[in-house]
Length: 456
Image 1: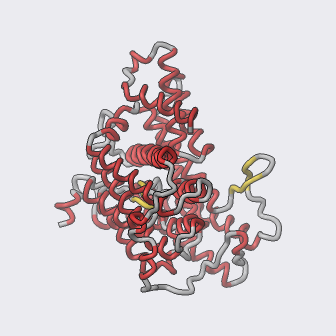
Image 2: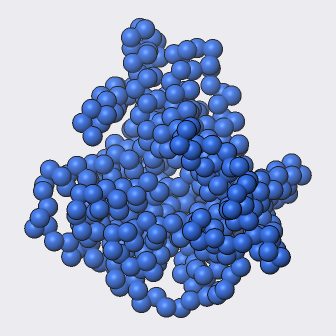
Image 3: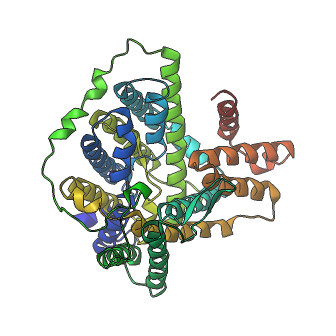
């Protein structure tokens, strides 16, 4: 049945590989179950309700991706978009979280329409192959950067914005030991991959977690909540209390629009829309390139289904009570493990559903244990840049700017924006636009991106 539905042999994979890939993707994404409630609860939303909404929205998104596109891409409420939801729309602009959910819901409906009319697919296909390769490489650096931050190997600095961990001071037995364990985790994961151990990325996460437990038991690692370092030893394994979901479910339809300014509300929707569409496109480009899923013309077959899954998941997530649900760059970890079909994404989705019961256990996995997986995945994805023709400045410069902007601006969509603008303008001004046969949509996107920087 699985072969008939997911076409495993056609995609050169098998059930065991797909299940392992889905589990690996879940392990690198599971942090959202802890992070999303912490961010969205700043709006006054109930933490446990947000956790359940996050898990359910992720399950719905992964299921849609498996059924509509048969791709190994996993979905969950997006980082960045949740911060915009909480800190800008609610805390800064003063709207209720119900209004913010309604903006996300409307965004999802608009995406459904755009997906039906091929607009998002046309945008994807209009991006030159060079830019797609650059996006893949840029996402690799971005993922690695997130991993380094999660491990607290890279920390903030007043002098240089960011710097390397010092491994000294009063937080050594919490932050310092966690950072060292992350480095050991990278080494272990690298060794497993060199030895071609199937599931090496996942085993790297688990071994690093076990090492953390041992360090805590002997007193080398000391939890310090003030420094963001918590106990890595599970104190509970299951919870069957699901009643709190009622505190957010359906609240999107109870929003009070009495004090809403129409223009402001449209701006909020546009901001959600803008970031989501290009984060999703960037992720699809990057992960699909890594999985060698693009055809000879650089297009992703069945992209309409993938985009529709993203749109439906966003609308469903808003009803459940969470911010925009989007395709995750961490899907690359499952692809690295050999995931090639929707069986990978449905496995990830089922694990998110299972997390409703085992949430106390999953939330105990420390960020320094998942960080090595993100760093290693970044290594795999950056390899795509060798296919870029850097000897041609009209190709190399936009590609370089795209790659550099993603981690430095901490945004996939900003990297795409800078890349598109520079690619179009450089080739247009130097008279190479006709030779490159630049799609008219690239010109439209360039204008829109420039307008975004001017007015938003």
